[in-house]
Image (cartoon, rainbow, N blue to C red; front, top):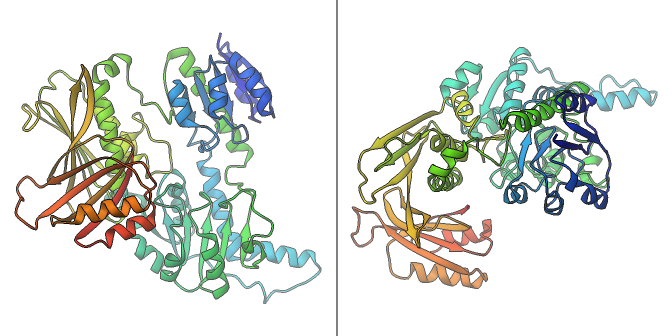
Length: 537
C-alpha cells in the first residue's frame, strides 16, 4: 500500500481521494527541515504546495520516494534536477488555478483603473474626495496581453467581454490561432506602443527576466497601466519606479515581486499609484480545492495504473520504446533544447519538423516527435510541457508538426534533423547523429543550418558566426581567457558549399564559465563577428 505524506496545507479532499484508493495518506503540515528529513524515508509519495522545500537533501533521504506532487503550477520549491537524478517524478497541476489567477489579474486592473484601494482608504479616513479619484473607463481601450498561455487566454477572453480590444504578443501563437481567439497578434514593439493597459502572463526565464525594463517603458504610451500577476523579475522594479514617477506609467498593479516577501522599504510601496497584493493569484478556496484534487488523482493514477500525468521532468514513453529509442530520444531532446534557445521571439514559430534519415524502418517515431515538440516549446510557455501535452499545446497555437523519412542517410548512415520555421517562412535546421565509442552511443551535433560541425551537445555552449578571416578565433580566445573562462572543446564549421575566402564560418565553443550579457556584447563587437549566442544544455 503506497504511503503518501501531505506536508502542506492542502484541501482535505486530497487525503480523502488517497484514502478511498486504499493509500495510507498522512497529513503533517509545517514540518521543520530536520523533522522532514527524519520521516521522508518512510513514504512513496510527497504532496506539497509552496511552503515545503523539497531539496536535494530531502530527495536523498527519501529512499522510497517515487513521486513529488505539487498542488499548483510553480515548482520553484522543488529541486527538479535532483529529483530527476534520483528517478523521482515531479508532477504539478498547471490548470487548476488558471481561472483564479486570471480573475486576480483582472481585479488588479479594475482596482488600478478606478483607484479603488486609495479611494477606500480615503473614505475610511473620513474624507470624501470624488475629484481626486477620477478613474479610467476600460471599454474601448486596448489591452496588451504578454503571453497567451492558459492564464493569458482567460484574461484575453474576459477582456473581450469588457469590450476591450485585445493585442496579443506570443511568439508561438499563429495568426490563424489568434483569429480563433478573437485577438490581434502583434509584435512586442507594437504591443508596447499601442496598448493602454499591459498585463504580463509569461514564464520567468533568462529571456524574460527584466523584459519590461527601461527600454520597454520608453516605447510605451504615456499614461499606460501595467499589471503583473505572473512572476516577479519579469518587470524591472527600479525602472518601473522611475516610469511611475515620470508619469510615463500612470499606475501599476503587482501581485508578484522579485524578492518575496517584499521589503517594506521598497520604493514601489511608497508610491500612491501602485496597487499591490501578496502573491494572491491562486489564493481562492475553489482553486486550492481544484489543485488538491488534481494532485491526489494524479498520484492515484501513477501508483494504481502506472500512468504519468502532469510530469515536469519525465516524458511519457513506454519502457520498451525507451530501451529501443533511448539514445535517439536523448539526441532529439538535446537538439530541441538547442533549438528552443536559438529561437527569436519576434520571428515566431509556425512549424516544427523532424526528419529521420537512414534505417528507421519499423520504428515508432511518435516518442521522438513528442520529445522534439516538448523540448522546443518547454522554455517558452507558462505551463509544464511534456511529451503528453506538447502536441496539443502546439495544435492550440496553430504550430504545424511534421515528420519525414529518408530511406538513406547522406553524410551519416543514420541521422535526425530538427527544423523550426517562423513567420518569415525560413527553416532553421539542426542535425544530429550517434557516434559509437567503446560500444556506447554518444550524441553529436553535426549540422547547424548549412554549417558542417562535430559538436558534443552538452553543458554551456557559445555559438559565434563570423567572416572567415585570420585572427577572429585568436581574438575570441583571448577575450574568453581574460574573463577566466576555460574552453574544453572548440569546433569551426564552414558551409558545405561556401568555402571561398571571406565566406562565413561558425564557431561553437564548449566552455565552463558564465557567458553573461556583457560578455556577449563584447564578443559581438569583435572585428568580423556577425552574431554571438549562448546555449545551455
